[in-house]
Length: 76
Ligand SMILES: [Zn+2]
Image (tube, protein in one colour):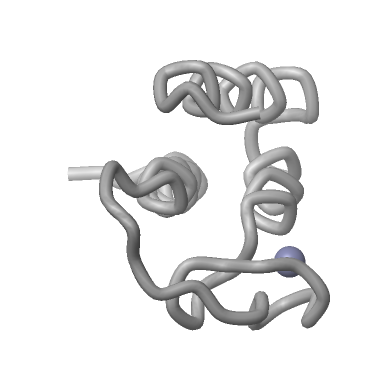
């Protein structure tokens, strides 16, 4: 069975992005990538995750997806 590695990576990033908006308070620390924004426990911040996702699925789609997650959690 052929696996589209790019699609798998995109899904992994999407899951991380969703997990970056936890339903309950959790531990946040500095982003492991840009070292400037807050990220959930040693992960990348939502901006870095969105950037990485954009490289795979395109800027527009990544942005729309991120906005949908934000909307669902009532943040920003
Ligand atoms: Zn970052």
